[in-house]
Length: 371
Image (cartoon, rainbow, N blue to C red; front, side):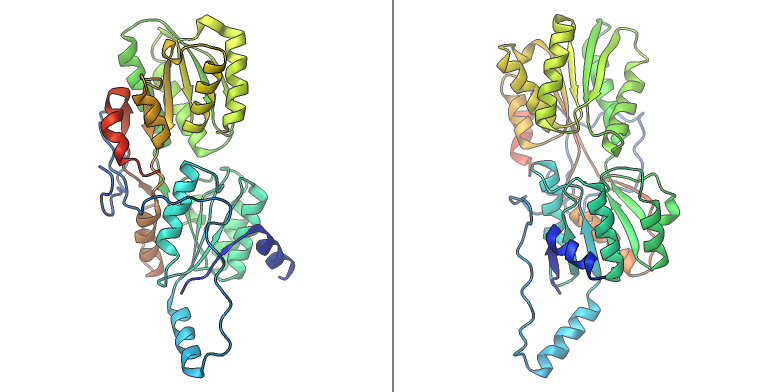
């Protein structure tokens, strides 16, 4: 039974009233260690082609037709009782990566197989907490949550556990005790950072290089993992120096402001620019062009793997390396949700397959990009 894709207004009313293409089911529960070689190609989890996603992605389900006869009503009730009540509370329903995640989850769960509710977290912690409480009140069997930050979810997770609602983390993690949620599916952010660092070490060949980093949102799993993994590798090599690393919150406009600041302060000293996501990379490229600086003067490293960044890689190698972060998590999430609904145990940590792409690989891979 299809349920509803809830806008924020409805969430508020409820409160007042009471994260090679097309490989089917491709995901891994094995931890990939930092000692493994950098992947040469992507193995996407399967998912429908990404649709345009903005704000509320689909119309709310229409109210039940009261003119139905009794037999139809009984059939509907039977269908409702047998369909697992699943909620998905996303991080933010933006463009690019976040839109691809939302589309993948909605395409997977918004079917007659599930009693499904989607809530746009709008990048706000308080909205996610409110949505969690509404899901608990709705007696959700499984709540899929892509948390905006790691800290602060302890109390609401305890409420969910006490109410018998299973919580499954998608994309990002929380700092709460692992006993408060069933498991997590997403990217090995730490390994992503290490892979970027390893590639840069090979590229430098001992040459001294100065690096500036545009970090993501403070406290987000992606920001923490990419920072820690990258710095772990770089700090082992004395030929590298990190001139600055500040937050630009995964935001293009903030990235433009920060890149301008870096250029004003460090100028020609900069050799390498690292952005924690593709959106900030676009801001960096725009800033360089506006200042009439050739992006090819720098080694530019980005994370996520959107089609647009692959175009930049093809376009005279304006971007040199992109470390993939796979957003097509719907099908893999469904397999794990099905196990939870059936009362089966799942692995606490579940990684998706991802790749690392250099500029010379971009043209071949670009047609495979699904977002």
